[in-house]
Length: 185
Image 1 (tube, rainbow, N blue to C red):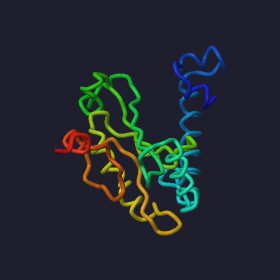
Image 2: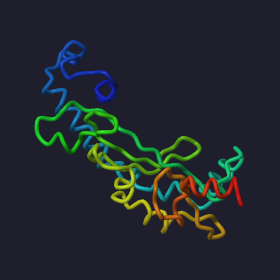
Image 3: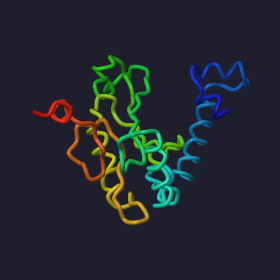
């Protein structure tokens, strides 16, 4: 029932036809299950240090370099996503994203080359800038504490953010940096 509820598009009223349950009952059951799963496994959503050992991080950097990426110390990528929601009755300004022109919640994840998401932050208001979400997640502190190769080399994640946190983020070059490298005078 939980998976059916989380699939899209589905409404609570659809479950009366599927299961013969009233929408209120489905909502209570689904919310109880979600709360239980979150309480049981939430430690895996915030930079899973049991999974991200220095050896595993080093293997990720090798996997990324093997695809001809010019990222020597990168083990993962920041991926932000928006999930559209119905327009709320109150406080709709907080969740309105003017760039996409929709009401939404925003999530930010770190994705590794094997497709696993070892860090997930959110939901937060849809109006927030990606850099604000990154700073609120305190991911830079987690990376500074735990993102090292077996030899102690600091590792990074690739983030298309305009941030000055070069020790933990591999960011794309600015246009000025790009043209200076490709057109030196």
